[in-house]
Image (cartoon, rainbow, N blue to C red; front, side, top):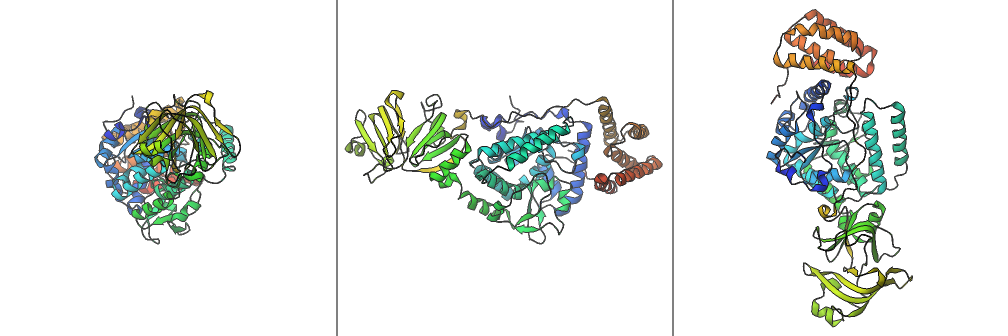
Length: 585
């Protein structure tokens, strides 16, 4: 059973979302992982305290986070539930539609893994640094929390194409490989080629693709305030010790945030070429609402059904009567006849109708859409008396001709209503044809025919109407982040990091420090962070000043020989000279 950490927010999650959750397995974090977290968080605090939109340290505390230790989900949930949110761990990337729905339920999904030391500045893969230190601290800001939740509500209804899911799977696989120390270069190159091929053939962006751009340029990489002096609130910037500084440079254009932002795609593997500034969080909501007004769940009609057909996954079409049809939609060639293939369910108000689950419609569902020819009033609004006046009542054999050419002939065996409207009429010995083309949609020998009632399709959205009853599991990736077996030399390095932490946190005698320095030089010459942590302990304890000087010289020489480490090392050395921040809880 999933650990809900005593948080009612998690306990109320629907089952179709709980399928994505995994245990955190805190014991799997290595001493190097803990050091990576501490380095990034100390650097973030040093810089972000001046450029982040909100008071960074209070935000961390409100989210149950510490600079010193990778967060424990229990501590996070103990804190977040006080402001109506929760946190749960997932395995890396999850489908965007699921991510959005978690947000709508006030749950931050936290990637359980943490970036490798070689990717300490930035990783394209979601990790616990990005998800917790980036997203969680700002949740205490009410206006932002409202935006995030509403974005989730809108995003969970967004239509996506089958290409979107292919791209998601390719990105997920590549991110797993790039963060795996065991991945072969050839395997990564192949995964990159697959992703490039998919991205080259994406076609017109779907609703989800466009909405993801708004999410990226706000939730992940957003700035707020005056255009010439903005502050950072985007989680991608707050969790990237490299880009959080570089993005504020004058050579990175700062553009006003507007609906036009949907025209700016993004690349998660590269620094962003521009950023967008919102004056307030209320403005974000305004732009989101303007985009939502263009989406299928608000527009309905043929164009929205076409999006469902393109999706090739379970979607829901809502008739004007309120009847919801959930299944995989297909093209009938007739705009006035709706058709699904495979298991289909009927619902009203997001609750599946008794006797109309997937078992009742295992091979699909089809029905006309539109008014009856020669009848001025919508059929869905007829009373029983009015139906009888036009010959429609149980036991009657009727012929219903729709304005767009579909004809239904059969014996009425049942009429169902919901919320005062007729939602379907059941027929026996029924045939359904297209008078214009001769196409036969239903034959008497196929059994009873349930005809949906409604003049038009008023809404179409991604997923089933009643996801619990539908048991929707189709979008869970089959690629999993592997666990690692570390070689002996790496395990020995883990022990050095663990010893340093023990000395630093408990003020133990420093007699073990000189052997650590010798072992770094002899066996772990490629590592720099352990030496940096050792230097910090020595300087703060005034222990072995000459050894401290030797370590500092060694680090500076390493930064000269390896330019990719220069900023990491020099920033780390500068941080040692600053007073510490006590966030231990």
